[in-house]
Amino acid sequence: MARFLVGTIPVIGHVSPAVPMVRELIKRGHEVCWYTGQVFQASIERTGAQFAPIRRWMDYSDLNNVPPTLMNQRDAVQGVQRLKFDLKTFFIDPAVGQVNDLSDILHEFPADVLIADSMFLGMDWLAEQKGLPWAEFDSSAISLSSQDTAPFGLGLQPSNTLFRRLRNHGLRWFFQQTVMRELRDYTNQVRSQLELPPNPVYFFDRMSPFLYLAPTIPEFEYPRSDLPPQVHFIGPLLSPPPAEFTPPDWWDELSGNKPVIHVTQGTLATNPTELLVPTLQALANEDVLVVATTGGVALDTLKLDPLPGNARIETFIPHAHLLPHVDVMVTNGGYNGVQMALANGVPLVVAGKTEEKPEIAARVEWAKVGIDLKTGTPTPAQIKRAVKTLLTDSSYRTCIKRFQTQMQRYNAPTLAATLIEKLADTKQPVLQIKQ
Image 1 (tube, rainbow, N blue to C red):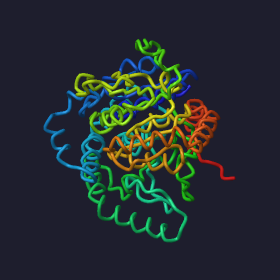
Image 2: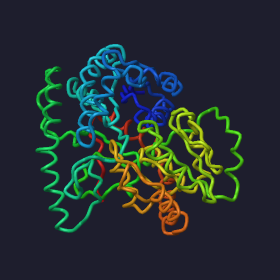
Image 3: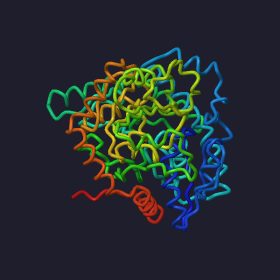
Image 4: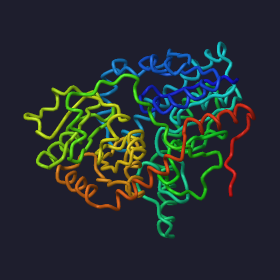
């Protein structure tokens, strides 16, 4: 039996992928202590893990803890400046509090291995301080720099041509040495508060030297000839169906003869005018059933009067229950939702320009499992055209079914637990054996 200390950013997209992995570790007889936001305490305790709350930094699992002035500052910037603001405020600044909290937890719970999501800096720095092995699992697309890819965040697809490899090299240098250099310097200033030395590594190239779990299949990621050997593809870490689910009154309509189109904006970028409203407008006169989920936004704020007759709207429906009935999913590109759609054989229309969503959208189009609208605010005409293409072009259905079959060959919780156990046993990097 081993002891594992898990840390996750207090946002559902970072917490939910760890749930099946932690359950599997506990099922195998290990002890797990999980440190994250208070909102997730009940979910974590249901896995059998011990919950440890955030104490020394802003617990933004409850948005009421986020000062309105901070959100106003965020809303005032866009593009790369918004990305920098988010990284500094929600990922880098909390790292000192994370390390201090986790150090206290280690006194009471002496872990053998540390586990964290890829944006949780505190676990990386704690491992550096304490000399402990640690495993990292991703909650999004792989962001590592490569000679074969453009810098992460630009949403550019790869190419093997000499010109584009030179382009990638130039963009990578420009991004790292000019656009994002400030972020490296800022990170090192924060590290100095813990008396940690400066780290020259580019922010998006940080990774555990021991074990990195990529929760997808290789076919969804760009080929990299220089992928580090501690990277393991484990298949998607899918959220299990909730124990209790009461279907809405209209649920039987999903079994009708009309194609079912699901539109969701996830749980972060939930402004309904960006995607949800234009999708309802786009498909209002089409012979389809549209199922929209608002990500928690109150239904009376949508300003849709009247609601299209072919639309059904709920604040939330578990994807594990809904997606087996869906023919096309329209999304802003949240990673977990995309993986869930692929696992259910559902092609995607993606319209996302915030956070890392352009990267996910680009991968969807590159893999031929959907259409990237290359905007975060698509028009109804763009959405209608993309949905019709996915419903009528059989090549997308062929590709998505191949993806679904590939994903079914992976048991992500089992693979993750086995690799983590190997790290606990050996305390050495768990490396891929190249064929």
